[in-house]
Image 1 (tube, one colour):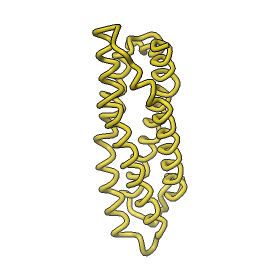
Image 2 (image 1 turned 45 degrees about the vertical axis):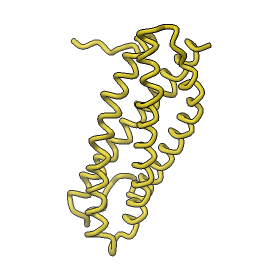
Image 3 (image 1 turned 180 degrees about the vertical axis):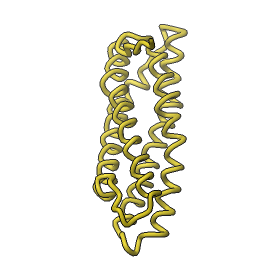
Length: 167
């Protein structure tokens, strides 16, 4: 029987590796897929469902915000945590100094995802649209769930722990 990891006490580098290999990898796979599906739906259904145009535009804003956020974490913050694991004297100050920005980005990302949900019928596709739209709504529901866990791990666990070890 698998035991859940207690991320509040696990090595910080294990936590950042988990976030990158689980949540960042998931986003890197799913964002292009969902973008492609939404574009296809807009092409096919926008005349009957103009709300798809809004959802499409919002999704591309969301995707750009998420991708830039991941790049920042994967090129600055997470490598610093990894280096600190090998050398306890390594400063995490650049990461600590960026934490408020990461939290603000999370709020923006969550807000965009909420707007997408509102534009796309609370992720419950109308019956007059094909099953592929329902599938896309299912993918968006899963993405929303993954983002909630991802943001929780960073905002509530990683960032406070990074600040604590840097104090």
